Length: 279
Length: 316
Ligand SMILES: Nc1ncnc2c1ncn2[C@@H]1O[C@H](COP(=O)(O)OP(=O)(O)O)[C@@H](O)[C@H]1O
Ligand SMILES: [Mg+2]
Image (cartoon, rainbow over all chains, first blue to last red; front, top):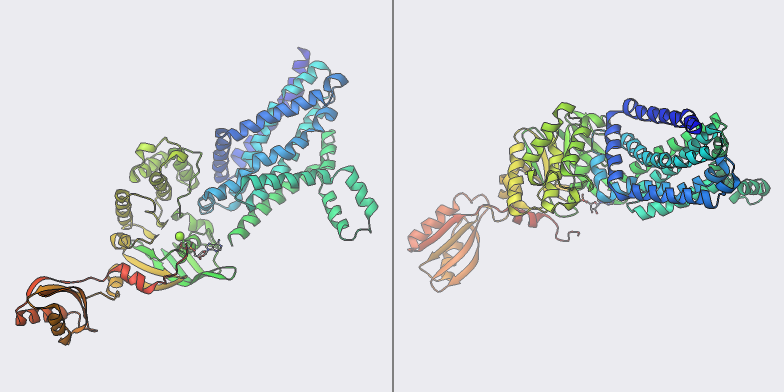
């Protein structure tokens, strides 16, 4: 009972407030056109099986793996980082492209892009509206994985602030993958192609920040003349270091800026790709 | 309302539209005629602001489509080729979405949707999902989308494509009716459509304008314009033909049917003599005692002009 109250106070209520701010931002700060597109896209996600399939598979895999492989129950440790959040981005490497693959490829396949882009709106209205709708699907997944937090609180006395940080870091990482998928889907009218290429790029981005890569970069320095800058670049935009900093509960300003810049850059690139494709 | 000056579009090396200029005023319906691959859709995509142009200038209602993009686009209703739709919506939801996007005031959206549904005869499928619609209904749903905000300018790319004859007829009438208060451009490769609804037509081939005028003016340019169709008896066909060819007004005689006792032929006028030709033929018949069964002046036919002046090696 006490645990539940603590959970509500420390975790659920802040989470609801954050959500409320998110929705309020959508409703009031953005132009009407973005809201209209956002509403249509959200409806379309939840009218089609894709959102449900993604949510269910995500919940099965994430919870299952956490309990059976993450050793959550055995460790008896209340920290979710080791068992849960360290695996979570791996799922989003696949799940975020699965959610986002239709963003612009479907629009091109149906020909509706011609309708959308001849309406009296700026292209970024459409890009942001569609992107946010896909973001809501990801958000729904994270909200629905909430029971695991309850279980942890039932078992022990975790630091719910850190868990919150883990969710924020995961959400931002998934949003980065989604933004990458948005760019890739602008290139092709095929959802499958968009899915596969996006998974590849997300994997690269995720692994690029891993320790071995950083080490390779340092040790190779000066060596492989051609590959070094490439490796260095991939290592530089690797998401993992930023993710782990945030997930540990260190609300680093630089990491947040990294995520937001990354997303903004991808959305901007989406606009550029759509523009160049038409010219 | 629509002003297009020296418009060109290249796709890489390929020239899709080559230095096209035209204007359309309110109350005018301009027909774009041309074989497949002529550049009709490309031109319309540039006028609606979907494709950037390689060279030239487009203004819609005084607003430049590139510099004042949103002002120009908000004046336009557009039916793209193949009538694309969001397949996961119902007809009504789709139209409501378009009305919102087109900035129809919130309290007028219901009325606008109802009106578009009535105008395009969509009552029966109002609540039906778009992906279960037949082609005719899909097309008319997209047409409804283009008129939902009562735009001053309408651009319709093959608006009667895939409709049955009754629906074609209805859509042509609709275009004609709306053309009284709007500036309309529509493209087609069906020639009777131009005669049925256009006040002016442009024939495009390989990206260039090769003829421009009212349907009547265009028809007058056809080779057979002013020819006289004649069916007469009383002499052998060769005799009648010889007599006809002696006339100063006659350039040539196309015999369509000949017999021992008569002729069916198309008589072509000499340049500038087409007005006198029927009378001359009639005089001839009287003086030779021929029995005239049929004598009529042929209007030029648009499809003949079309075949004469456009290439034959069309794409797709
Ligand atoms: N996106 C594109 N890339 C390359 N070529 C194109 C593109 N769109 C159209 N074309 C070419 O431009 C020409 C004109 O096409 P289009 O305007 O669709 O003709 P129409 O509508 O009159 O049938 C065609 O030869 C077509 O192949
Ligand atoms: Mg076309």
